[in-house]
Length: 318
Ligand code: CP
Image (cartoon, rainbow, N blue to C red; front, top):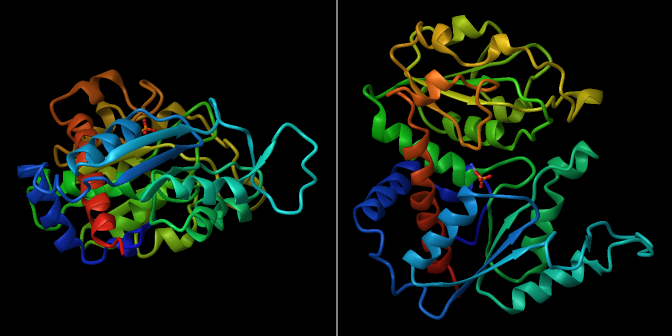
């Protein structure tokens, strides 16, 4: 594998899952693969899970790891070509990226949507520059439109907990005070659409996702109706995608907060969220603390998804 930014890069999901379960049984099985190889993790945005799980994954594979927080201790980077650099950004990303590539074998990048231009975000300008100019295999640690390491961990978790071959999985919008990117819901939809699960998306009108990510999923505007008979509830907030509303918060309606009322109409569904989660905005204390909440095993599977992905990138090195 030469890059990992979307579901297509991982290939056959059954093979990827069987690798994940093999690594889960013995996470140090490939510890020789990364000997004398270096992973550089670049963060343009904050992280808890991605930072820890990816670093752990790299050490499972015997790698050295360098972590760089662009906004803490590095020069501020200009990202657009043609800009007269007389402001507060002394380095251009087009020099910074190949320099970073000199010091490592594989690069992980976290660069969220900036909500200034939908085109800039949806063209994945930042991570594509890393792919183009670093000379190294690059993987996404959450980019502007997708969070594939999270989605792969979500898939592993659903496979572990599902009680029927074709579970009903519901992605629900839930309220949040700030504008959040669509990367997690886009990516979750992309990965769910690559399975044969019964997949439903529910959100208030105005929160339609990019149709290319919605794919063949059923969209149901009535949250209670969507939850009926569900086996998994995946909650997430996202800002509006459409037109002039791109990046805006259109509603903070707490009727959409996932609580016992909604969970009562499910098939004793498991509750999932990528974390961090705002309690009593996205989900009530009672639901996130209940026995059916699997947010912690879901987060634990981030180590597994990252180990599979970095292993594949190591195997693809020339
Ligand atoms: N789910 C997730 O990516 O968490 P972090 O933002 O803490 O890395």
